[in-house]
Length: 386
Image (cartoon, rainbow, N blue to C red; front, side, top):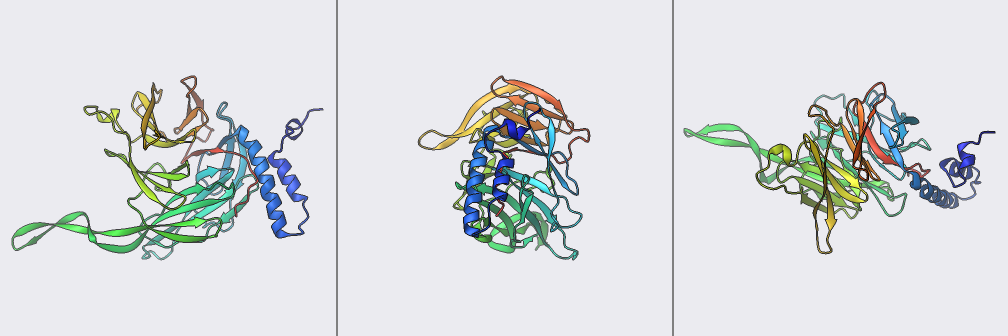
């Protein structure tokens, strides 16, 4: 008799936790929530020993998620997410993953073409239990697609969603970019636009509501490789990080769980180097074994930096340089890190770098290829979305 996976693995799996939870009699809502949360923590602790990747190869009307082992690059269908409350004919896009909970977004379109406000639907989903939670709408954003970042608290079920939006209010003391010229009394003067105010609000799973935490010092950069251009971020060490600019000196925006913002510069390269030997457009933030990391891809090699604390302050520490088999015309669409591996995705292949063996592996993509792919670390869990 061939044993099933559940029989072979004696420790508590997702299936075990779901089975136990379903058999608990609902005598008290509070008691059941406590038991369910305890079971989820036990199961998550075991599943965390075998973390994998969650992959969405292509955007579609329904979001199909796959699990993948970074060693074999073999995809197996994990879940299909298609909530009924989703805006019709709009595709969902996964932007974060932590403790088995993922966050997805999709655009909200208004039939009123003169409406200058835009917004995103924000979803919290568990691919294993298939539970989905649509967050309440935030403050309307004026002619600016909101930037999103997700943070997770010390309690496994706590999370916060940061949403940067444009209020549409003019900042009178700030001058905007040059928009042209005008002539007055025979002299030419530069015509400047106006600066608009950008603020941030945070949704907390503990309160179930949004709270405005004030203005932001700068805006996350727009990335044309993503369908929702300002949603690229990572969460590491209790903070959310967004790239702001790749132009020297380059900047990163961060926010901690208390809502405190900070702007840090990207690592500085030596003077006299060519542009393609410094910070390039193919630079990506990664979670490198629990620390903020920066992967900089050059035409023939790559640099990896880590943001470290030396006991007095944080600074960028150069980790290593190595050759890359990535061609100049090969567009990297997604990057992540898991354990000792750095995973890069182009339109047709996986590129996986092992930091221990210092070797690259190349694997073919699914038959359909990749279109707006997302790949993130993932741990199976039965944690609730609420």
